[in-house]
Every structure is written in C-alpha cells, then in structure tokens.
Length: 388
Ligand code: RFL
Ligand code: PHB
Image 1 (tube, helix red, strand yellow):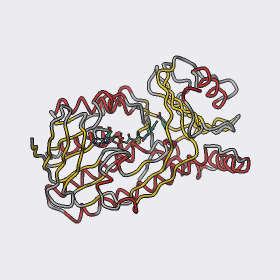
Image 2 (cartoon, rainbow, N blue to C red):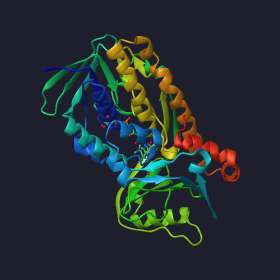
Image 3 (tube, protein in one colour):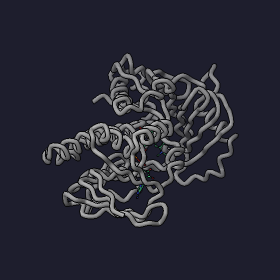
Image 4 (cartoon, rainbow, N blue to C red):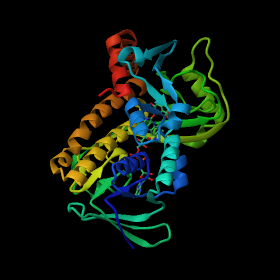
C-alpha cells in the first residue's frame, strides 16, 4: 500500500516522537516508523537529566504535565573526590536548574499524546529503505509488522533512528564527514528499588574508577560504575555492585542505601559526530547524527535541540518554501553539537581513571580547580544546564 504524508519520521525514540508532536501542532502531518515494538521502546532505560530547554519544549508540545508533578528539579550537582563532596550550585552560578525525570517516562507521556492525537505510527517494521532523498518527493519503503510491503510518499524525511539506524547511511559518502572517539572504559548501569540516598546527583572520582549516584523517583535509584570496556556482566553480582558503589561514593557520616537491583547493563562510551546532518530532503536529528558519553547528560538534550531546529526548518520549508532556511539546518545544529561534544569529552576525561598515576594527579588538580574557582564552577554549570 502507498501512504501519503508530509514528513516521514524514521524512529520512535524521543527525537522522532517529539518531532511528530511539534509538527502536528504546526498542522504538518507525519507518519512515524519504528523497528522495535512499542513496549520495548517504552521500557528502554536511558537518560535521566533534562535541561530547562527540553522541559520548555515538552511543555510547548503538551506533554510536560507529569514531569512537573513527578520529576525532581535540581539546583546543582555534587562533585566528589575521596574525602570531599562539593556542591556546584547551578541556580546561584548561572540562574538555571535541571530536572531529573526518566526518558522512559517521557516516552510514556509521548505515547499517550500520540494516542490522543491519532498519530499514525508503525512499530516492528523491517527492510527500511530511503529512496529519492535528493528530490522534492522522497519515499520510504518498508515491511510492516505483518510482513506486508509498504511505501510512504512524502515531502521530507526526518532520520531520528539513533546511532545504529539506516538514515545516516543514506547520505552518500557520509563516513568522510564523521568524527569518532571510543573511550577505553564502559559504564555498568544499575537500577534499584531503593529511595535515593541523597537529594541531587553525585559525580565521584575515585582511584578505582568513576561512580555516579542518580535517581528516578522517591523509590528508585539509578547508579553507574566505571568498568572495563569488555567487562562481563556475569562477574557483577548485586553484592559486588553495592560494595563497589559504597566504596567509590563513600563519605564520612553518609551511607549509600541498598535495595533490590532490578536492571543491570554495560554500555560503551563514544563521542561521534556526523558533520553532515542533511542531504536533499533528508534531515538527521538526535543520536542518528551524534552521540556523546553520558557523563555530561547531554544526549537527549542535544536530540531535543536538533528537533526544535528541525521542526522550525520543516515549517519554513513546507509552508513557506524557504529553502535558504532549510539549507542552514546542519550548520545551526552542529554549533551546539560540537559544544556539547567538547563538554562531555572534558567531563568524561576528568572523571574516569586510566591507571596512570600522573594522569590521576592531573584529574585531581582539575577537579580541585572546579571546586575552588567560582569561574571554573560557573563554566561547568553553564555547560551542564545548557545555557545557549
Ligand atoms: P534513540 O533513543 O536511540 O531512538 C532511535 C529510535 O530509532 C529506532 N530505529 C529504527 N526505526 C526504524 N527503522 C530503523 N532502521 C531503525 N533503527 C533504529 C530505534 O529502535 C529507536 O527507537 O535516539 P533519539 O531519539 O535521538 O534519542 C537520543 C537519546 O535516547 C540519547 O541521546 C540519550 O538516551 C542519551 N543519554 C542521556 N542523555 C541525556 O540528555 N541525559 C542523560 O542523563 C542521559 N543518560 C543516556 C543516558 C544514554 C544512555 N545509554 C543507554 C546510551 C544514560 C544512558 C545509560
Ligand atoms: C541518569 O540518571 O541516567 C544519568 C544522569 C546523569 C548522567 C548520566 C545519566 O550524567
């Protein structure tokens, strides 16, 4: 069957669904196709910290209500080295806050909004193929969940299909415009049914490796440990995870609460940027175009920044035929992308040990500088909250 719509969106992650909502509000109809099931996308554990700009975008597209009720507004973060936990107060330094609210919850709110609006979404699609992207009438070919071949005829395609998706690869010779750094360590992520042990996030440097104490709700804690790049999950019993977290996050007079662990996974750390985010009528947004290590909590926030720019771009292109505006999408998006890539790389490099004692001393000197200098702290704060 052939469907007609104005914009075909590849990927129903946060970038794809936020874009669909944004365009719906501007009376531009879309079809979203996703290769996983709705339940899978809904339950995938990922980001937790939202910049004010993302919160504003979610409010604007009408999905911010639960976030304001159930999310936590944070004034800052704690930066820790052994024996010293120091609060960096974003509110005082740059007059901005961030919100702790799980990406799974955002996804749930977006799904609900899609249902109410009658958004056309196909899940569990295969064989996705982007055709004639360099023309004004591109098409998307795919096989639906029942094995039936389908075609979408549209005026533009939004590639929101994440790092492993097909959209970026539809840009000819894109590899020569891509830049990548793979880090020699991974994160072990843990979700636990236990109340957070502290009011705001703790980023801890420790000789045995980085640890992060984050949270999802009054009853759920999210934690991370720096581990070897090829570490084996089977070697990380619940008890070992808690012992290691307690040691790396230790502070006199404070104790990490323990509880049942409900999820554990190991994630690789990479910085990746495609300096080409558009080709003809194909536009990339979010992880399809770039990824950052999660240390600076930038991935989802960058995706949201792209989506706002791409939303504005598609409105200009499809309602006013403003080609010059559209041609500038990549350039505008990449400014913020490279800024966040630099910040995430810097924060990651400062917090993760590599076994070299000289490098460890430099890291401690750098962290102490951030702790002691209000200018250095303000610089971190500005990048973390995402002030433009
Ligand atoms: P996603 O979320 O990867 O969604 C892409 C969607 O496209 C689908 N797809 C396809 N669909 C159709 N056809 C194909 N051929 C397809 N191939 C793939 C996928 O199934 C998927 O549903 O990308 P998007 O929308 O750009 O969103 C990006 C964010 O998910 C990501 O940047 C963040 O999760 C990164 N991140 C964090 N970001 C933050 O801003 N703050 C954080 O605190 C934060 N913490 C994190 C994170 C990422 C993490 N992991 C697991 C990488 C913590 C972790 C642990
Ligand atoms: C999270 O809660 O998942 C989280 C928070 C901050 C980060 C990365 C991940 O920097």
